[in-house]
Image (cartoon, rainbow, N blue to C red; front, side, top):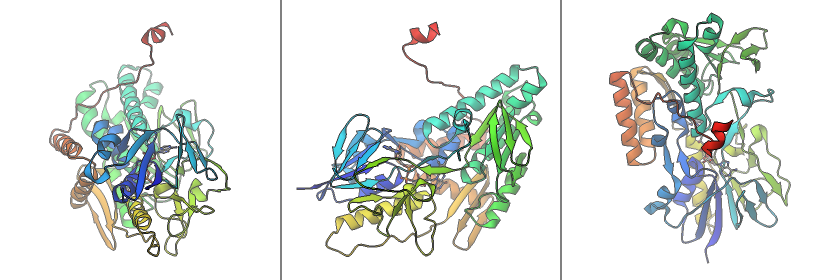
Length: 425
Ligand SMILES: Cc1cc2nc3c(=O)[nH]c(=O)nc-3n(C[C@H](O)[C@H](O)[C@H](O)COP(=O)(O)OP(=O)(O)OC[C@H]3O[C@@H](n4cnc5c(N)ncnc54)[C@H](O)[C@@H]3O)c2cc1C
C-alpha cells in the first residue's frame, strides 16, 4: 500500500515535489491555507496596478488535475500543530495522519519587533497584501487630489519603501514610473513634482544579494526615475504618520511599504523538541531532513541547510525551492539508493527597475539596461504557471509598454458581510 506523504504548502517547493514524486509509491496530499498557487516575483506588479491578481495566481485543484500531478489531493487549511509523536498535523478544520511530512510553508513578514508596525505598513508577501497595497496607493492619490492643506497633501503624496532588496527596488521603480507617466496624464490636480517616492535601505547598497554592479545600476536606474534613494538609514518606528530613523531624522508619510525582511512560518511542534535556527527557519541536514526527526523534511525558504558554500543557509529564492523539491522527490522515490545530498545550482539572479531597465547576474556575467530587461521579461513569463496566465501577462505587458496605461487602477476593497450590518456601523 502507498505510504501517506503530506506536504504543507503549495508554493514553488511543495508543488515541484508533488510533480516529481512517484504517485504509485506515495499517497500525496498538499495542505495550503490558500486554494491557489501564486507567483511572488510579480506581486509588486499587482501592487502597482500593472497586473491583475488572477494572472499570477493559479487554482491548486486545477493544477493538481493535470497529468503530472494526477492522484495528488488538496486540503484547504492553515497547519498550526505538528505532532511528531502521533505523526499528525492539525489545521483549523481537521487532523491528518502522515508517514512522511514535508514542510514547505515558506516565510512571512519580519517586523523585527518594531511595535505596531504590522498595523500601519503595507506589505507584499501575498496576493491579498499586494491588492491591499494597490488600493491604498490609489486611495492616497485620490485623497491628495482633493486635499488643499499643503502638509496633509505632502504626506499623502509621499510613498516610502523600506528595504533595498529586489522586492523594494521593484516596487519603488514601479511607483517612480507611475509618478512619471501616469500622474501627469490622469491626475490633473496633482503635479508629478509633488509626488515623492523614497526608498530607504539600512546598509550602504541596494540589491546586496546580487553583485555590486547590480546595486550600482539599480541606484542609477531609480535615480533616473526620480526615486529618492536613502542608504545607511535604519528605521526605528512609524507612528502617527511619522517615520523615524535611528539617526534622528524623520519623514511624514501616509504610506510605508515594508519589504525589509522575512521570517520562517511558525508551527507548534509536539512530541519532539524542534528549535528553529536563524530567521526562524527549520534546521535540516544535507537531505532536507529536519534535525531531531526521522520522517519530517523542510524545503524551500523555510529550510536552513548549512553547507560549506552557504554556511548561513541558501538564499531564499525560487530556484532553491524548486531544486530542493526535485531533489527530495528523487530521494523519496528511491529508498533503496543512497540518499543524494542537495547541491544548489545557481542559475543567476535578476531584478527589474522599470521599463527597459533591469539587472541580471549569471555567474560572472552581468547585464543591465534593455537587454537585461528583455531577459527578465522572458524568464518571468516562462516561469508563470498556465498558458492562460502567460498569455494574459504578455498581453498586459505589451499593452502597458506601448500605451503607458493599464485599466487596473481600481480601488476594490472587500466588504464585510452581511451588508446590512455594515450600513448600520
Ligand atoms: C515580493 C517578493 C518578490 C520575490 N521576488 C523573487 C524573484 O524575483 N526571484 C526569486 O527567485 N525569488 C523571489 N522571491 C522569493 C521566492 O518567492 C521564494 O523564494 C519562493 O516563493 C519560496 O518558495 P517556497 O515554496 O519555499 O515558499 P512559498 O512560495 O512562499 O510557498 C509557501 C506556501 O505555503 C503556504 N503556507 C504557509 N503557511 C502555511 C500553513 N501554516 N499551512 C498551510 N499552508 C501554508 C502558503 O500559502 C504558500 O502557498 C520573492 C518573494 C517575494 C515575497
